[in-house]
Length: 316
Image (cartoon, rainbow, N blue to C red; front, side):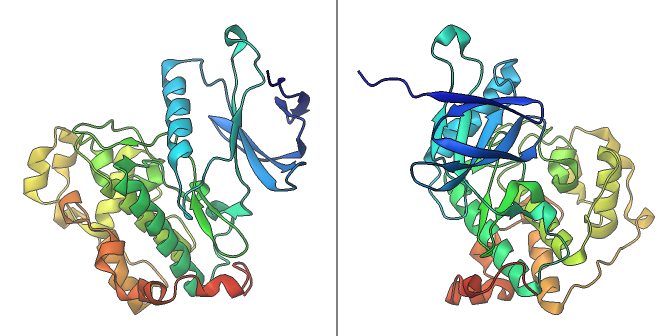
């Protein structure tokens, strides 16, 4: 019988970490409502990894479902633009003291929330193209990510991007829940609690992220869900009467096109202006994936994918 691996115990910024002894040099690199992440070195392979500890994953049914989704989906993800799972472990030796588990993933240099404003246009093109390649793979499996935001998009110094955090992801179904995605990146149909949204809500999030990278600030920074919807409609206009009829939310009915002021987003070149309407149309029946439509903005990557790897992603 194989002996149980030895674990080491360490407190890092108020959180107790119990990891196999082969993982050394732990250093916290991120924390959030659902978990903390440390970088570490695998002393056997000498590989640098990221270890995620989920915060009390079994304290409630909601937390348990989120943990199960992330673990089950990561186990099957095999794509260069989607984070994969290297290892999973628990320090518990018996079922009755099974309280925590850890996910080990490839280490990435940073995430997009930390690098706004220092990326050139060609690098932004390459990063957005990779987001869409990753989404094409995820959507092809019938999965909606539902929480795309800059903090869930990891990048390394070679400009390689991977989509992270599948705790809110789920299979596309006839009816979906409304409270998903960080508000600023939430598609209008989700804000309006339309339960029949599809993978196109992820494409909306990509459009918001793309606009943020070019503009240097959040595209739609709503204070609450109604303010979020107002800011979106100031740019895109009001939805069609046909779509409004599908909604059960009465709040949207008081918006009129004449009350809205068109806003302009600065620094958008012609190539960006061509692409953005295809990624941020207002209502879901008109949204299409850029990978399929192949706008000129991404054409160079279809011909010569990865040409930027000879340069550092963050050099000027």
